[in-house]
Image (cartoon, rainbow, N blue to C red; front, side):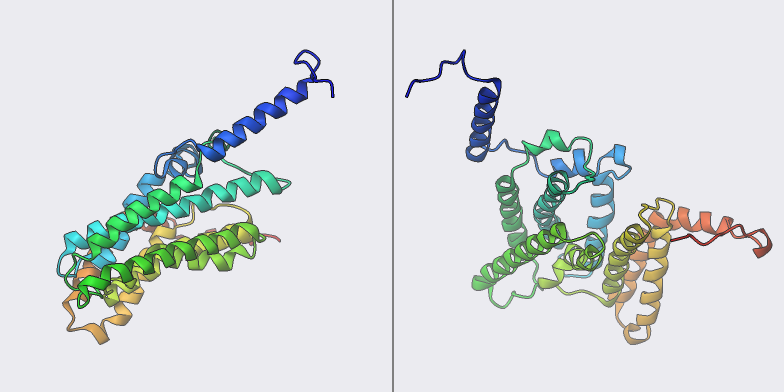
Length: 308
């Protein structure tokens, strides 16, 4: 067989060879990305109107800490544990984000990917994300074991290992659910979006107790994420003017009030309820005031039902 000289090789020959070399190099030595880099700079950046850090740290994480950590014996250790486990959770959730965009760019005829997706396509490493998740998860399990009233306090030697196994199960469940979510049609995703939100906000209940007011807060937060998604899927429009933070406040106050008669002597219900009401009021009062200002006579109402 006569070897082909480089001068006689067609152009596509060198292009394919270079692509194979890049692929082989990426599989062996994936370019490391930083924790939550894809979320912050690609999936939910400021240009998209969804600043990730403000929404994730200032809303999601803070709500989970208020719901779970205020009334345990060591609130600081509880908050640290929730922070670390929250980060571990989001390392795997970020894989779902990336996979969602990758499947969209690869399989969907009318794909919609973030502007910087192709910059991260060759950079994001699933292996690296799992390493981050393991490191933060191990630290979070150790931190939660420092809480005197955590569930496995009576089994200090085996409790940490049991908790670690439970957390691995949480992350695997998250990955499996998100994997199915990314591979089914968009309307069917509505049902799988709910367990994703339950895992996101209720995971500490596997290790520490939850006051009734905290349960009302977590429920309100789950609805705060799920309801706009339902509206988006059925209308095809992401309604940024939907007063969802004001509705979250009202849902929480309703649940908290309904639980008062059965928890009237429980100080935790008052402490968590007051802190949660204050936090949700700060986050949602502007929307509530705007809706109150827009109240007018039915004679001046120009509302029309949407067609379709």
